[in-house]
Amino acid sequence: MLSYAAVSVRREQNHPRGKLGLRSSARKFISSGFGVWPRWRVIVAAMVALVLLPIEASDASWLSDIFKGSSKADKSPRRATASKPAAVAKPAASPKRHAVKLAALSPAGLPLAALKAAATKCEPAKFRIVVDVGHTPESEGAISARNVAEFVFNRRLALRIEQKLKAEGFAETKLLVTEGKARASLVRRVAAANNLPAGLFLSIHHDSVPNKFLEDWEFEGKKSHFSDRFSGYSVFVSRSNADFKTSLSFAELVAKEMKAQGLKYAEQYTQPIMGRYRHPLLNKETGVYSYDELIVLRKTRMAAVLLEAGSIINRDEELKMGSVERRDIISSGVTAAVKEFCDPRWGMLGPL
Image (cartoon, rainbow, N blue to C red; front, side, top):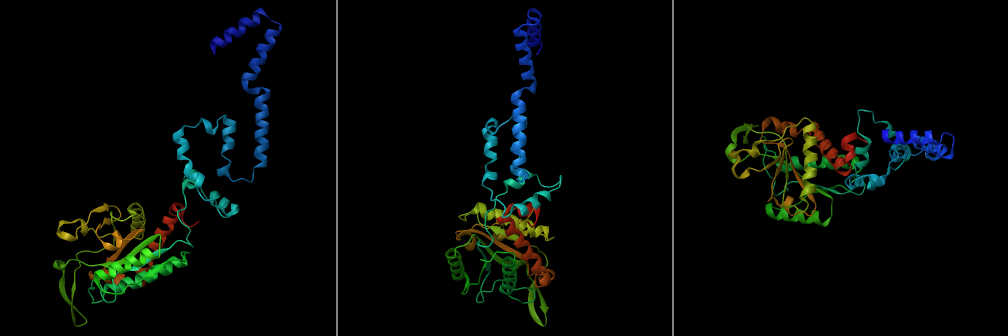
């Protein structure tokens, strides 16, 4: 700046009224930002802004680039790559509805960039979730502290989850009830799920404990067994599943919703006392475990998750698991997880 000013002063002294002096003044006028080109640029920008006023704020951010003198070409390749998800995000069904959503964001709310980056994974009306009733009438699973078969608990909860999902727009939800004994029924249910096909497989179970932890008691004059030592839900995935990444993603959402409902996960599966029933804990915050060899998780060709909703061998928790209130809590949590799986914005903003 200083060297440029010195040259200009010397030229004006040698040519105080000549053409060179006028040219120098013109150069100064143009370089100062008040020349004809910048003014034309501002006028055109203002005209464009008036024409495009109905456009929502998220799509008009390029106007600020005009005034700043920047362009998309000036951005680094890394930054350009980061903007790709916003380019493929589905537009809202109605501009008016979308505008309301944006207006609802307070300064302390979700940044607009995060909203644009959230991409829808599925369309609820067409997306199929298989809700699998764990075990069968012939192979009932664990027996509760009050002599009720696990299959009964599984079916009641699975039915409530199916109802809740359909009520929330997931019309293609499929309840899977299998017949037969033990291993044969496992193979049959995997084949049924793979033939549908579906986007998610969720198997519903209720927990018990290894026999060495059981204690004797009587309920309504009948001998039974219980263990009040452990309680809580747990979520399992198989690292051998064909789509483990998606399985884990959905499992995390289910576990997060269980925790958000005030439920605690079963921590005993990390303890050496569980012996061969011990499983690696993948998320110590929410209670997601791996169960790699479980057939229904390993052999299904879609993302698969198993939910142990709670312990029915624990006498207090059994009463809760048998209540309508607990079934509503769990089914609401599962439904919220499916919603967020299909549209991550739901988890950030709530119902849209």
